[in-house]
Length: 350
Ligand code: TXA
Ligand code: MG
Image (tube, rainbow, N blue to C red; front, top):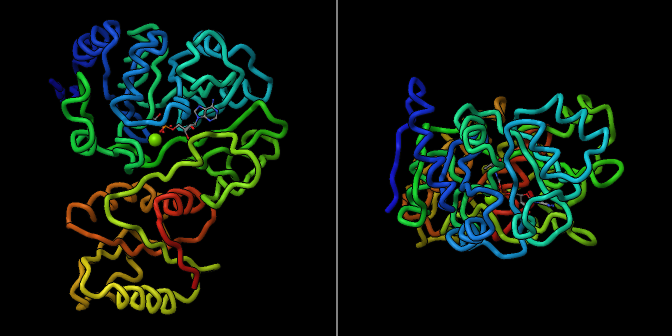
């Protein structure tokens, strides 16, 4: 049985008491964060953490993020906090930012046996308060079935995990709609493992350091050994096949639209949904296929926020194929392209 509680901020502590009970018993609680919904277990109960892998269908070698509510917890879960990481924590926490550090006292299963641990202090009142009341860190991946788009609303969680978790705390849509930025501080300079709401440009400015940006952070085939196990799996995919149409720059949107239409022609007789942008959506009208807009190219944060919900919407519309327009790979655009490339079964360059 899955209980769903609509969060009422005026009696939050009372509502969270039930969630804390469940976590203490080794149960699973889905909670909102400012990025996406998380599927949480008490990080110190290995059997509970094991359940996370089971209900998500997550590969055993893909480690989880540990969520903390205070710096005291950081010093428990990490055995060592380099100065650069400490400064980053001071400036960016609570927030959509995750650091990989040498693992402290959390059970090995949390980190899938690695000697490092990913840690984040979320900037969402419900998430933070839940951890505080539990007084233990919460291990939580995104609350989707493995390989599916991350959930940005409780409805998405219901689609994937209803009946498999004990409680879902519903607090509406999440703020950023894409998962946290992950940076590995066990390397010098630190390595961007996964781009997120905080862009590399902002990070370098705030941290005052260089940042290594490997090919896989762009969602491209990784060179050498993947340091973040999560990068090797196909991700974020709706049931439909995603075809991503990319350009080096997006100055000539007419050419982009033409290429999308060419792909559409190849797919005659199949059910297709086009994921366009405000600037292009009208040009696809009258083709007899549903056209959704991710938002305006001048507001890429909104595109990031809509992305996963739109991929799920394409499924709801019964699409076999989704044709998606790429965006400029700058700032948050890097995050959008990382997610789209990982979701895509085929990429087309214009
Ligand atoms: O915004 C977020 O980060 C959300 C919310 C719930 O906090 N969580 C999330 O978790 O996206 P998940 O499990 O879907 O993604 C965690 C990513 C994976 O790519 C995983 O491989 C990587 O972080 N990761 C976790 N621990 C790691 C470690 N010790 N070393 C390298 N990568 C790690
Ligand atoms: Mg995930």
